[in-house]
Length: 513
Image (cartoon, rainbow, N blue to C red; front, top):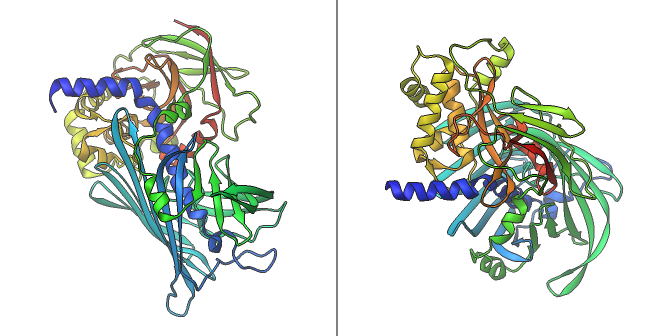
């Protein structure tokens, strides 16, 4: 890529890149929510008050839904089809998903495509699944099955296959922390709530979903009136809603971020791929700010974090305190940029923390030979840990093209494509640091945008070199400035904890210097 073009793209990412995290999260939430739309999986034909098996239908079905941004801007479609599919003598249902989103991001067309299938036993619940996502040259697929009390899955990324597994209970549903992906639900009665164990293929983690029928409502749909039951589904502290017709079909579903799915004829849903809607994304990603105006390069900032008026408190951990960010109580935090560490590591982490922050993972593949070889080349042993961390920072900052990408990042995938935004830079940096023996973790929070005059969601890596130091290989800061506010730390499995903040967080700047 020519130097001038790279600088232009870097400037675009510097201005707009931080908001890609919530855009990607909301899109994943929205698309995966579509797997709720068939009544065979939402309201199975079970005896009242029981739950131990999945719904079963002997009639093939196909449903289309349009996808809309706030203001009814069409941006894509979701298609879900089901068919009966016995496995031997065991009855069950096969579900297929096809979803496409197309919009303009920073003047260029961006597409996100997701596809998947799952087989659900009529007696045992979700038994196998195949989930894939593509955006540009980035692709990731997760396949898995439940066998003898274990969920065994394979992550396919960067030309490699990585096994993962967890123990699970007998009743397991498939959902996404980004949305509602319930493949088999208990029969819901008004005022009753249910908790079910579930697997999220987008964060490769286990969790629980809470379901409740919260009332009845007559809504307008395609020029007519439809009587519906309203179903609330809470995942990771975030509540979405679905409107279920008397026939059992979901005719409308909403996220708390303003995205909507609505039943539509195929030709109407397909027309939604106009690729023109994008303005509302800024509103989804921006964090309202008051007080003195922050500035890039600040060394110290004091803020008070709050919620938009009338909103309930988030069901998520409070932002952490560490060597850079300190809690002053009552939602107030002080961020102070440390001096660059000098010399060898002063104090080692305890053994348990060291293992956690040196570990390889499904998407942070620190123990892969390609990651290990690159880390050994760019950060050879002999230098002190901070010097080696800076060598990794320099390589990632100069070697990865600054390109807006809506993907689920994998270190191996980024190593192949050599492009991405803050997610991709951070995942690859973290894998390389851990491979070099430097404890590292991923921080998720918000950062100040000079051009847009607001805080936007962002990811950056931290390294432990006698103390935790925040680094910034996306924006070009060896030590991240004080306009970064950390909301949580951890690998991608913890990303769902960010969801309660989206569209709700406010920042009051008290001091900036």
